[in-house]
Structures are given as structure tokens and as C-alpha cells.
Amino acid sequence: MAARNSDVNLGLTRADVTPKSLWLNRRALLAGAGALSLAGALPARAAAELTPNSLEEITSYNNFYEFGFDKEDPARHAGALTTSPWSVEIDGLVDRPGSYALEDLLAGLKVEERIYRFRCVEAWSMVIPWNGVPLAALLEKVGVQSGAKYVRFESLARAEEMPGVAAGLLDFPYREGLRLDEAMHPLTLLATGIYGEPMPKQNGAPIRLVAPWKYGFKSAKSLVKISLTDTQPETTWQKLQPREYGFYANVNPNVDHPRWSQASERVIGGGLFAKRVDTLMFNGYEDQVAGLYKGQDLAADY
Ligand code: MTE
Image (tube, rainbow, N blue to C red; front, side, top):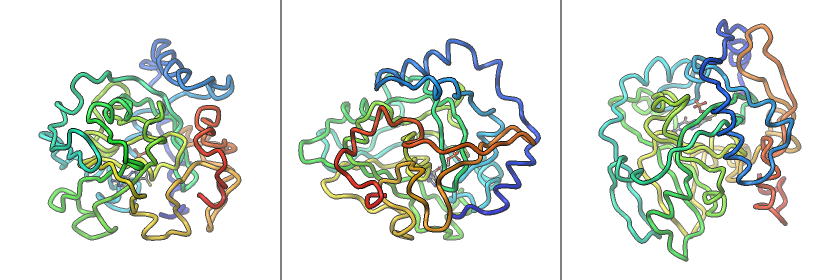
């Protein structure tokens, strides 16, 4: 992954600056803030800034290497992806392992609206209004066994429908992981939609991970397998470049990527008014998640 100049140009020349303001009603804002406050107080400044990007922005500037390297590739190629039927394999240290039809896996779980900041390790950011179920609710449903310490996520790798997989752009399937306490945190979501619509294919249909205090690469898309393990899972990016992409990948303005600063970020959208803002510790979710890392050296555990 590289913060390339072309990324910057794309953001600055974007013509569509209209947020989906019709959708952004008071109810949705309250739902987002309410969900967050469950996990702790949301700083007034953070709450005021959560104006979502437009659907056009969210669906036309993506990282999804299964469809190609360029930010436009997912929108260009993901339309061919078959997302129904879809099944997710649950295995490892769980009481009820198996291959679940997505509908069965989600049955009985309440879909919530969450407006989250999204910060890519490449130093750009958006605000995205997700719909989804807390990962904790799903893990409780399948029954986590006492020896489990981590959760491993695996994305679809279907060469016939994914040109980036066919071309071998990365070591697919895309793999990610969380520590069990991170996975059980109330902020951690399995997202199934954006703006109240089913998940757009380029954003990881039909179901993807979202952990808003971590760099975006942790949030694996189009999940086909979730495993409970007792050892830290190997992840795609860590395996490729361990010095650049750590397992934790918590957003941290004080720990730079070896090749660029993480102190600030380019806000996607706004056309000519696109701005750079300071990056917030844990992407603005410090009050909610700092406790997970008590006693850890965040520079060593990057
Ligand atoms: N998941 C899969 N399977 N493949 C990917 O290439 N890219 C990651 C993450 N999840 C990626 C993935 C990266 S680097 C980012 S920043 C986010 O998805 C981008 O999510 P978005 O396109 O919905 O904004």
C-alpha cells in the first residue's frame, strides 16, 4: 500500500461535493451518537465533525485489491461480483462451528446505524454511515470458547469475478485479525450496509469488518470465514511488510509509517475545499478504546 500522488490529485479534483444531506436527518445523527455513547462519552468536538461523506465519494474511491490497485478499480469491476447466495464459515474455538448462510448468521441480530470516522493508513479519511451488527453479538451467537484469544477474518478470493485475484496482485485470500477483546468491543461492527442500503460491492458486500479506531486495512471486506484462534493470526499486510503494517494498526498520530507521516490526514470530499486535518489518537475513539491497550507500548505494538 502506498500513499501515491495520484491519490492526492483524485481527492482535490473531485467534483461531487454534495453530501447526502437529505438522508442525513436528525434521527440518523442521534442513532450514531447514541451508539457511540454506549461505549463511553463522545467528545463534543468529535460529535460535531461527524458529517458523512456522500455515497458517491464513499463508493468511488476505494481500496479493494481483489479488483485492482487503483482507487477507481473497485467501482469499475466489482459489479460482476455475485453476493447472493453468500455463506460464511465459522470455525476454530467456537461452540457452534459451521458454514452458515448469511441470512441465518444474521438472523435475530439487530442492525444498527453507526456514523464512524474511517482513516486509511495512506493518510486519507472519510466519515461513513454504516449499518451493521456488533461483532460481539455474532460471536456470542456462535459461542466463543474459553481458550479463544483472537479472531481471524478471511475475504473472498474468486478469480473468475475478481481481476486482482486473477492477476495475483496480493497474497490472496485477504486475511486480517483482531485480539478477542478488540473484537468484542462495542464499536466493532460487521457492516452490511451504508446509508441504509445493502453494502455496495466495492465497499465489501455483503458483509465486512469495521473497527473505526484502526487503520482501514484492518477492516477486511466480503468476509467468507471467521475463525476463533488461540494464537495471533497472520495477516496479509503484516506478512508482506511487517515493518510497515503491524498487527494492531491503531490510528496514532505519534507513530509514523516508515515512509510517511501519520500526524495529519487528507479529508476526502469537498472538491477544491478538500482539507488536511490533524489525525486524532485512536481516530477520535480514545475515550472508548484506550483502556484496551493499558500497559502496552504503542510504538512497539504498532
Ligand atoms: N479488504 C479486502 N478484502 N481487500 C482489500 O484490498 N483494503 C483495505 C480494507 N479492506 C482491502 C480490504 C484497505 S487498505 C482499506 S483503506 C479499506 O478496506 C477501504 O475501504 P473502503 O473502500 O470501503 O473505504
